[in-house]
Image 1 (spheres, rainbow, N blue to C red):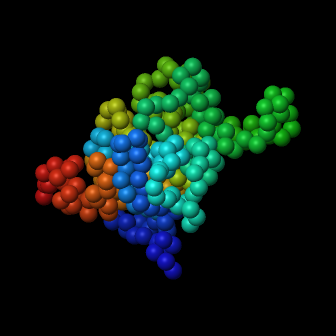
Image 2 (cartoon, one colour):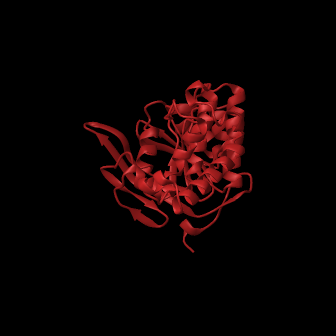
Image 3 (tube, rainbow, N blue to C red):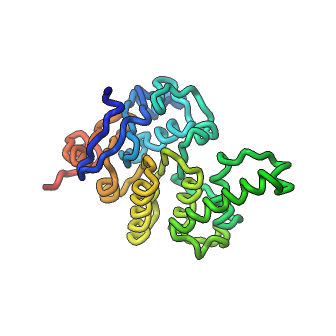
Amino acid sequence: MNAAAQEYITEDGRKIGGVVMEMKNITLRFGGVIAIKDISFDIREGEIRAIIGPNGAGKSSMLNVISGFYNPQEGEVWYKGARRPQMRPYQVAAQGIARTFQNIALFEGMSVLDNVMTGRLTHMTTNLFQQGIWYGKARQEEIANREKVEEIIDFLEIQAIRKTPVGRLPYGLKKRVELARALAAEPSILLLDEPMAGMNVEEKEDMSRFILDVNDEFGTTIALIEHDMGVVMDLSDRVVVMDYGKKIGDGTPDEVRSNQDVIDAYLGVAHD
């Protein structure tokens, strides 16, 4: 059995699966600016994988490469054991990879329910005409999608606001709605771009609980960018650290905490 297929034991004794995604020697340039320089790391099935680093380190660019928003000039993305060709974001989404955004990207005038329903687009097979007359297969598909969305709304405890326009919601609830929309796609890999940004302590605790529940109950593989180091170290199975587009650390939270390059570049003075 090769290393990619072997199980991995986390620091807390939890088993996670083999490698489901590999970033191999990824380099991304914007004109003369190198956003990512020759970075390689993998993501294992069922794990919570954090990507951290100072502002401008290239973290969001890496998430954009994974989700198909950017195509790197060098390197390869491997998914489920096969090299992934250049793809558009909707094609990546159809493969089972969903994401949230650093800046909330919701339809402010639409209700929470309708926003979450947009996450089901990759599961809709009927055309606009069939959906317009709402008969037969289109009707059955609509009912099935709504049932799934209602399950997610219950799971994330946002039943009370399901008919509320998103524009009326406070920031923390908007973040939860965006998570619900991503989950509606039933992803095998969920990408979270700073899910705790702008939240107060209570909201962070709620979001942390939901992320752990999604990973545990749905078995969803999660890759996240986050600046709150307490959250990262508590949630993550493994952490990759970037600085100025380069990888300077990769390992368990404890390994990253004790990595001198990481301490110098990002974490600051090490504490016993």
